[in-house]
Amino acid sequence: MLQQRVITWLDERLDLSDVKHFIAEKGVPVHTQKVWYYLGGMTLFLLGIQVATGILLLLYYRPSAEEAYESVQFIVSEVEFGWLIRNMHSWSANLLIAAAIAHMFSVVFLRAYRKPRELTWLSGIGLLFLMFGFGFSGYLLPWNELAFFATKVGTGIAGAVPVVGKFMLRFLRGGDDVTGATLSRFYALHVAVFPMLMTAFLGLHLLLVQRQGMSVPINVEKQLREGARLRQIPFVPNYVLRDVLLWYVALAILAALAALSPWELGRKADPFAPVPAGIRPEWYFLAMFYTLKLIPSHVLIIEGEQLGVIVFGLAAVILILLPFLDRRSSRAEPNPFVTWAGVAALIYLVVFTIVGYLTA
Image (tube, rainbow, N blue to C red; front, side):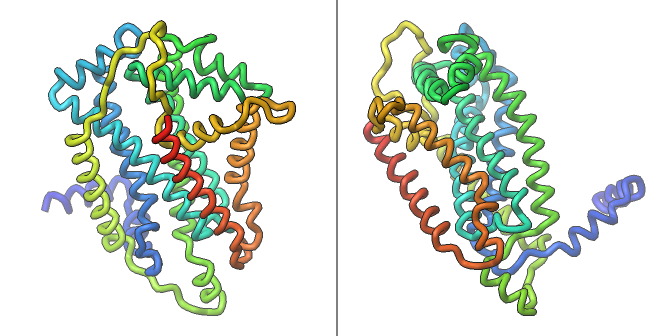
């Protein structure tokens, strides 16, 4: 059999005994057979879609203010199946961030960040922030009208960061305003800097997950400490087949969205044109965007936008340090405060995203 001969040939040269042992021995706790435990694999699959479609788009895309819009227009109108690749790239970016956010909340509610998985949490949060960076930088690349003015708003918010805001604004824009230099900066971040960081964080995250295995709920951990035996199923093929089945479902949804709801290109960006109605960032920034709009121009002696940025920055710091702040969960004790805080954060994001979309 050709397959067996190839495996034998590789085994003689690479010594695959460790890989065979891993496949034969790795198990997954039975209690993890819930949809929440497949969100990490779903996120990884959608990231793979992003990489594959992004490489294909790079074959035709030209990163300059004079040619970017026309190159995307050429892709969707002239390149064979170019419209499909571009739509899949755009839709998979949104589904990727949605899956990553859902994965984060599942980790919070299940306390999967607790000792000894603090580093797994930190690497996962780093990946989530990088995905936001991918979304923000990629939004401008078609150089259309909506993306141009939304980028002006987004970089303006970065400029409101105390102390370093002015530097961040000029660094992101490549000057005082959004120009072709901004497009070049965002292109470099999108196809070089962020992928390099993503590779490092993803490799670390997957290594830690494999080293530590999947977490168990706090009540199960208590039973294990009392001498109970952890029931498991084989990772290969049982768990992998379930993962792949969900990937097929995600691929079908993605293909349907790409074919039935194409991503509009709109009009080419014109820096001298009036700001069109309905300018807003992508949905995953809408809650923050709408919140900043509600804050008065000045609160005591602080500018409203600066105050909002400070509050969101503190929230990000708390999110990063959550495993170290939640001492009770690290001792396998229930912590209702974290649960209710997570529920409140989730409700806030959903409600303000919807309201921000409807009122923008």
